[in-house]
Length: 117
Image (cartoon, rainbow, N blue to C red):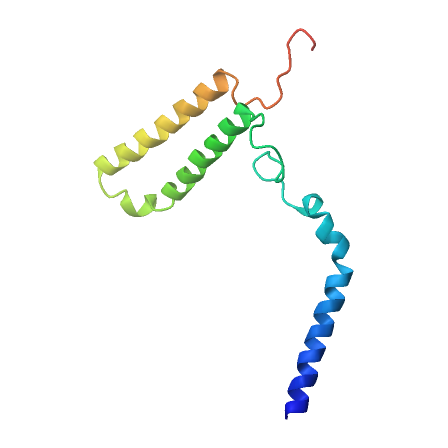
């Protein structure tokens, strides 16, 4: 019984050692395989340029993502005219905000000059 346990332990150790040797190159290039999160490189200087447009698009995405979540229970709460009015008011505020962002060009990711077109 002890021999079997010892052989399992040695086998696990050898498999771990083989995988560590194989993946040694990948451990050195961890930045290459890391995720590109929020427009920042993971291993970089802390004081770097942050795109305000990226921040604005992410906030708009968050707002409309929450809107989708709030739309799900609407069929269950539309039993009175007060609830219907509050839902319409909520959607109108969101649409007005979206039109405001569109009008001022916040949704244009690429700034294309009209004189070049």
